[in-house]
Image 1: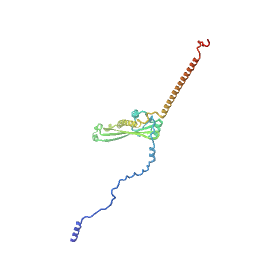
Image 2: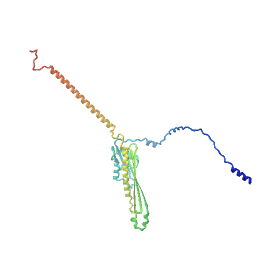
Image 3: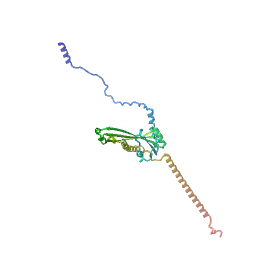
Image 4: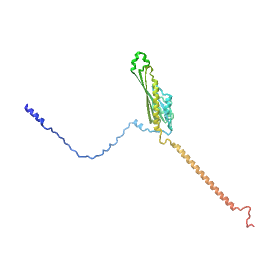
Length: 292
């Protein structure tokens, strides 16, 4: 026991040992790592088809507007709202925007909208959609309803109606998307249950959302159609016609000048010939000296 104790004490007094080893090559100069070779870009066929589309609007642009109403018929665009959205391009030169017949644009398919716009002679089609989201909840005033009288005037219900609008501008011929705009407006009501008016809230929220959408559309249309290179220059056919007319007018003027010069030269020659004849012809009243 004593021997074991002294052995344990001796091991505890031994110094701790350890070490490490290795090597290095000294300072290494910086070597630029070449970039990896470019990987082959793989694009799915539908995405590749979309990326190959290009804008192709003429100098004078006609934009047809398709208004899509709610599928369930909860609301519809008013005449004033449609007129306001159509007026978004009033300040742009060479741009005409008009509504497309609602009886023809009945579907929600993009291709169908493009076909209907082509029938109206439009170069681009603007699709305008809207959606209303309604949320109602009760508040603490509901606790007074058991008294019956507060049911008519205690604002125990709250209504939040969010109306969102979305507009997208596509090329009629190839479906290229030129611009997109969206807006939203929130209308809140806190009234008694019997006085909550969801239709009035929808109208007010839609009205303000249309105002915001019109302003956003004006900015987007100004950005893509307001400062187009060559928009103020005449078309190639018109320029060629004007140049041809100018050349023809120049040719006529040159021809007239030549004719005038010819007439002047002829007059000079005629005058000279007449003068020579007059000089050569003796005066009828005079008598030559030799005759005397």
